Image (tube, rainbow, N blue to C red):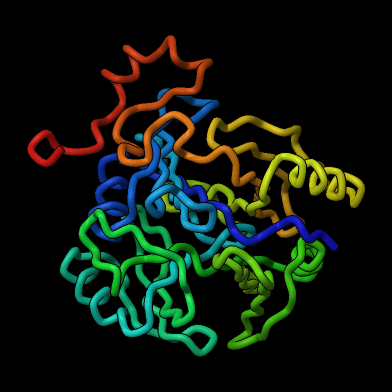
Length: 314
């Protein structure tokens, strides 16, 4: 069993409108935009990162906004719902806030004994806020949500699978343990993790396969402390029979990727070097940062990428 994985690192989704995406995650959810850069493989497309003050692993939601992408098709082989942690007693505030912002499908429910508020993000992404009394992570409050209500980071993600057995065994190999099963959903926990510790498995044997598009999660990333730990995980996964990519430098972390038995794309990402490697903490996410191989495109990209904010509010 692996011991290097410490919980979630980030979750990356697809979107259509960069400005709408930026508005939703900063103005509506109150997260901080910690980085605006571009997709390494499609530099004419943003890669936007939102999280706490410094983009701590376990807090970061990222998006690729492809302007002409079709809406995703929900199904199996994908992340079903991304869940953020908020303080106990704060869901009334969030329900009023989301309804006032005309957010879709706002529904107060319960998950594993905790109050949960389900909703749809700007592109139809299935998301939720869950009350967690013991989450000590420090929230970002610079986007207008006070500390009594602000998002702490991820709580969990759910995986929708046709057959959950092999993925469950993989997660156990990655250091997760069975916690409990409720309403047909199995929860696994990474003990002693970084706060973003839970993975839920929902088995839907008769559902069709998901189609990637706007509102779909592209991949879910798990955190390891450094490159040495990442190489240990990579070797172990290769030895177990998984096809794992070489280590890829993503500027703010190093990444490896592999496809799970259920079809979900997993990434193992390092906590180093972090989002302050090329910007002062006080100014994270304020300017366009480009990978070295795309710096020669700066003048073109600055004119063609969609503005993230209206001139009146920028």
